[in-house]
Length: 423
Image: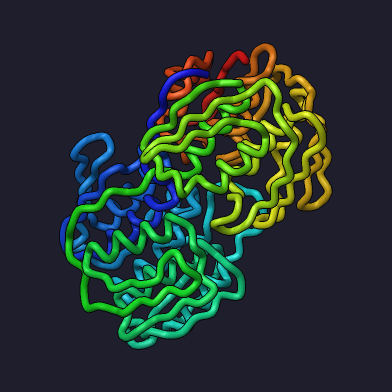
């Protein structure tokens, strides 16, 4: 792979910022919006709720929720997307009442929302989970500030509580908060609309409730995980790729591990250049909350480590079941053993093309990387998962010289495709 690739807006920021727009009295102009299925579904949900959606161009959208009143959301859409739970905080903040489905999206382990519920209850809401739905209502019509200590670091709970607290009465303090860049981005978006949030990016976030939010313009940060995926793809294919429109500091945890494998990474103001080498060194990885190595980069790095000289160990520190993709890699010749949250990878085995499946969003990206460095042709099914988080993935890879094609198969369910590629 050779050339340049431009990174889109951050998926994990966008899927919280869109529900946040529901709380704004006025027009939100959001730039650098990634064109992925998750954001499209959330914008459709807001439209069903009464928000006016207008596309200015491919990556800029205006959302006007001024005249929105509480109503049931389209649950057939909400159950397909994990980030639908951000509507709990947004609806409670705006209307004092919320009704959503339990989170959907990729399935790689239990996704309890107990910390979300704990936060909402601390803010004065009655919350009930019944028949796959979450019902929440503020005791006296409006939430009240509170001190909330999260029992575990949770990105989703941190963001959801921030959303709920913005229009609550009084001050909310979130302790043991997650620190990911997309949490900072959500806070910056809300602050630009009139919120008073301080400490985002640290383990203590303070939210001083305001009476209302006003319209404004905001540009979403670049996607850390999309950038990391192209960086690993370049390393795995002995490529030379400039990854543009990035914040190098957000990539430090990924850059450090790539350099440990012998990959050359050169950092500039808003881009990185990644040069793969023919000799990949072994490395051990443990996924952790930011600024640790991200769980969303674990499957991609596993592919690179199958090409390493020696034995590598990956320890999954976030989810219970994120190794379903290992069986797919084994079909291609990878030598990987899994014991609970630990994967042991015997490197140095050449991968060969095979029919495989995308088990989830990041596993799907990993299968594509495996196909790019494999001998022969790889066919990947269920790429609907990949489309949840990567904008124009096939087109961007082709521009870098990859032999990859997306093929619609008419006998498969709607929106389901195979990706055919030769390594």
